[in-house]
Image 1 (cartoon, helix red, strand yellow):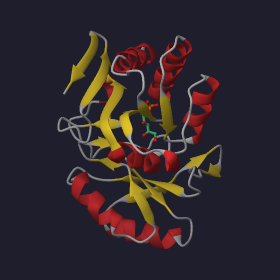
Image 2 (cartoon, rainbow, N blue to C red):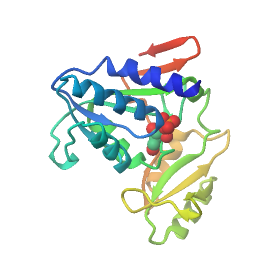
Image 3 (cartoon, helix red, strand yellow):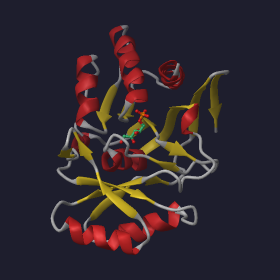
Image 4 (cartoon, protein in one colour):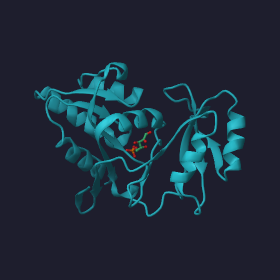
Length: 222
Ligand code: 5RP
């Protein structure tokens, strides 16, 4: 059922895409449905180009015949579409579940328009119950971890299949458990002041709209 809701949100977002657009493609299982659908649209003649927020999405886009442009050659991004891990009523979001938060933030903050797509499980009253991922340089990361603990977080180094997870940028991800008293907007600023942290998975409300797949249909909220 959840997969159907993700797909419904992704297909609704695709209605925003016009021929000639340069797209920013997010990362994750919801964006997967978007990229697949874009492949069908491109095969049917829709003229689009895209830049991707991860190697995984690059691979998927290639498999689906979507022309990719290296971010270094992109002048403007008309529309970025991405998923979220959690979003609050003010449209502040936590992202980075797939470890792509840095590239996702680069593309989201450069795009003219941003749409976030999700199933209804992602809607949360508060973000502070959700672990906040941060991308951290491996060099001296245990010092970085200590500074993070000093802020009141409990950091956990992300692993995959028993190995340390390495991002597309060659860094680590620390997943930070916070507490109910934390305002992630404020904490994200403090985290960014720590040398060794490249970026946090806290996203301010930069989306033009959210598209949510629910059991009662797709909801578009601006
Ligand atoms: C990857 C992300 C994803 O957008 C986020 O994890 C949502 O993924 P999914 O659509 O699979 O739930 O931030 O870094």
